[in-house]
Length: 94
Image (cartoon, rainbow, N blue to C red):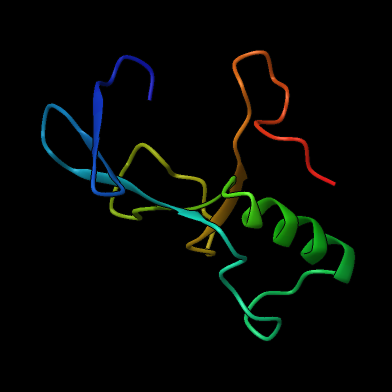
């Protein structure tokens, strides 16, 4: 995505030049998926639940029609945790 300008509105990231949707994101205050929908170990789920409870869990989806992201993945959603500019976690997770 080097050299491309983007903007964000209502949880969607667009290419500025063409207004093409390239990514959708959502902040969560609880883990958004029940056990049956995504496989996680109990410890992984506990960590994600703790992060989400503090409002620092983001799910995001790359729009497949965008040639910027040719990674051949089939899963539409990924999880992301916020970090500060100095690479430390945004909050202290216990």
